[in-house]
Image (cartoon, rainbow, N blue to C red; front, side, top):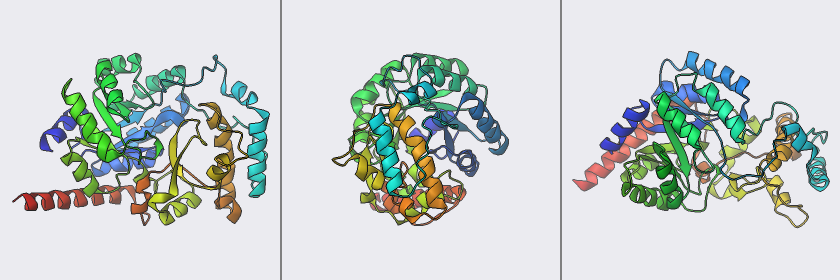
Length: 376
């Protein structure tokens, strides 16, 4: 464990390898200040808004290290260079009608202008590179990519800037491709994870990836998927991980970006209340199951659209759903959902991000002590 932690310290400058992925700048800064490593999910921002967020983090992170995650899928629908507004205009009529009818049944305002507002599904290489240009003007220590092989331009830029490049993988063959591509850190993510995930469990994929890459190159592996406690962190590191990559546990904090309605549903949820579905982005991702998923998985559904079309369709709808639910619409609450992992059943209260980091540290130390005692 100690050697693995030293490798991560040398790469990104953090002593306690608890990586916290969040779309909320407050969580990122709070985690890094508390001794973990905050990672801002940059895919929901434009280059201009990402600049604002990172400048704020620079001012509030007290000089502690942090990173950025830029989503550049290896495989997605060829949009032919069309803008978000142009793609929105091409959404099939039956899919638009299905969303409108669904919202109407739950008394949610149906006047949804698909593709309007600030929503930008930053999944094209062009947008990803523009976001990366912004990120590298700030003192980041890590840049990460999900949904396929990290683009060569990301890896080359990371090496030239002295910034570690990480990539998420869900199987050992994906890990071997990433190692060959030249990434510095692997995040082995099990199917328990919230968001886009594969089909192999964390307990299996972490040691499988660790063993596979060891034969090629010494690349540290972070474990991800359903990890909500320091004891789980210790267990993953006992399997060979150099640290953990977490996401869902930060949604229940006072700092997170989620709606009050979702936070309440999350606290009440159990581990069997999540679903791996294409009904939000067009690619399989784990979310809190709701009436939205029941409808899209039902017999009357027109079927999910591919990425990024499904995101263009669903994102404005969920904004209306959250607004209606937080305003007291009990029926709308049945549709409320967000990405969350199966570890949701281990979260039973709302805490500050700083407190979650402290709990991880205490729980981790106690778990390591128990293991040491058993070995003695």
